[in-house]
Image 1 (tube, one colour):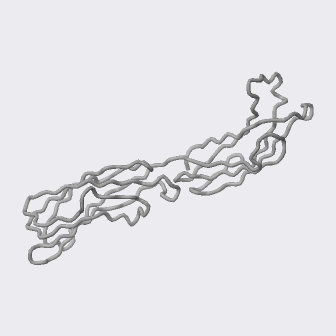
Image 2 (image 1 turned 45 degrees about the vertical axis):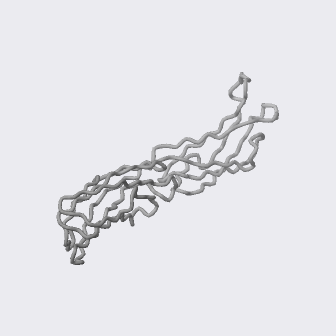
Image 3 (image 1 turned 180 degrees about the vertical axis):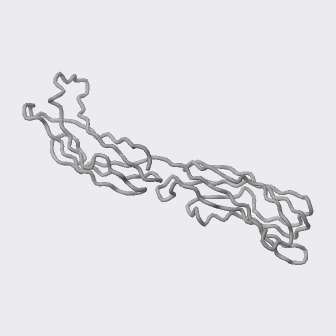
Length: 216
């Protein structure tokens, strides 16, 4: 309570967990201990600037008597983007009051918000046709909201054919093979696809597999 002319009790969660891209609805209630000519409240989320929020009804009320309660629904959503980083952030509901004499007051209810991790990436092969031996550039963008280490491996595609001699399959030199990328970072990976000397130089098909490791 900060110099309040009217005591207000705020009923809301002390902690929230947000899954990026999914809306979370929070029930918020206020109870006035005195006659309030006006009560106005809102969400302060400076530390979590990318969060989207909206109230179900306008958060301004007038003529609230002692013991009376008002309630509202607050919808929060952490966008599924790299810049909305995983972590724990403090936000709070701030209430401003004014009594019949025009005297102001205010109070806050803190909420600890945890933005959960998600893993997502975008990949591009240059040249984009994986059909010959040679050098390639593999571009990998970390679209997750946290730092991730990826493991990259190559695999030749044979369709329905059964490869009788596995030693004649393609050899993949990938550097770095386990890149560590920050949220939103683009990584350039060098890929060299080689064919054993004793194998006929027929057209080949291959793919690169991306597997996220333990989040960092």
